[in-house]
Length: 487
Image 1 (cartoon, one colour):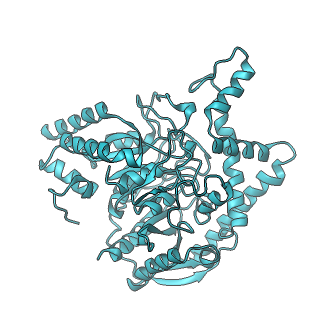
Image 2 (spheres, one colour; image 1 turned 30 degrees about the horizontal axis):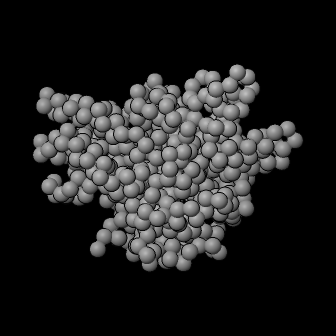
Image 3 (cartoon, rainbow, N blue to C red; image 1 turned 90 degrees about the vertical axis):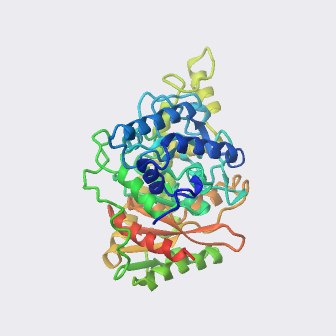
C-alpha cells in the first residue's frame, strides 16, 4: 500500500516509515523526535507508557542513520518506533510488570524478542502499561494506574496488554509487542480497534518474558494494520536455544500470504461462541466480518466445540492452570534476590510484608487460588482435572480443524466497558475472556482484526483461529477482512 511520506507520522505504516528512512526522505532521528513529541502530547490522558527511554531513543536513531550513511543494511525495521509491554526484559531499562514489587528492577539482559528487534533496526521507545504481572482483562490492575481507551477515555483499553493496544490506537507508535496468556493481546486489540496476533505456543521465544503462566504465555505483535503485524511477526519468530519450549520449525515470510485471498478456505462458526451472553452489536459486526470472507470466496459452516466453547469447562480449567503456574512462578519475589523489600528484623515477617505490600489485590488473589489448587488433598480434584479438561479442549480444536481451515468468533462478549465497571466483580471480569482462553489452553494461534463499531463508536474485533504454526492463513484471511472494512 502506497502512503504519502509527508503524512503525519501517526498516520503512516511501519513499512512506509522504514522506506522513507532508508531512501533518505527522512532520518531515524527526525522520526524519533516526532514520536516522542506525540507521546508527550497524548499520554497524560491515555497513560499507555510507564517508562520512556528518551536518551536511549536518540542513540538508537543516530546509530541507524549512521548505518545508512555508511551504506550498511540498517535492518528491515530501520528507524521504526516500537514500544514493549513492560513484562519483557530490556537490558539497562526499567522493567516493572506494572507492579510495586519490581518498580525499580533493571534487567541485566534483553529478552530474545527484544534482541531481535534491536537487530532489525527498530527503535525501542519505552515500556508500556499493563495489568500487574499480566493478570487482568482491563489494565485496571496496574500498580501505576489504568490505561484508558483512546476511542473513549472513560472506558478500559483491555488487558493485560492494554498499553500495547492503546499506544498503537493513539498513533503514539506504529508497532508494539504484548503477551497473551488467555486473551491479553486479542482483547485489548479488539477494544482499541487495532490488529493483535497471539502466535502458536512455541513460535516466539519466551526467554526474557517475565512469566505469569509458563505453559500459556506467548509474545505477539500489535499494529494498526495486518501487513505491519506480519512484518513484526517475521522479526520476532524463530527457534531459540535459550527457550526449550520454542519450536525448531521453519519461519515463513508472513507478508507473502497477504494477497492470496480466501478463495476455497473453509471457515467454521462455533455455535457455542454465538449463544447467550453475546452483545447483539458485537454479534452483528462479527458476522459482517465473516460475510466479507464469504463474499471473497470462503465457505462458512456452523460447527460445535462443546468443551472448548463452554465457559464451565474452558474458563474453569484456565483459571486453575494459570493461577497454579502463577503461584509457582511468583514465589521468587521474596524480597531477598531482587525487587521490593519490606524492612523488618524478622526473616519470616520480611517475607510476609514484602509480598503483602509488593503485590496488588488481583495478583494476591490468583496466587492464593493457585496455591490452594496445588495443595495436598486438592491437587487431583482441581489441577489434575483441569489438565484433563485441557486435553479435551485440544481435541475439540483438532476435530474442528479436520473440516475447517479457520474458525471465526467474537473476541469479547461486549465492546470496551467503563473504567471501574467490573473491577469489584472478579467473575464478571474473568468472563470477558470467555472466547479467548481456550485458544491458549490448546496452544493454537489467534488474531483479532477490526470488523466494525458499536452504535456509540467503540471498536469491535473479529477473532480468527488457525491450526498450530499456520499464522499465514490467519493473516491472509485477516487481510481480506481489513480490506473489506475500507470505504
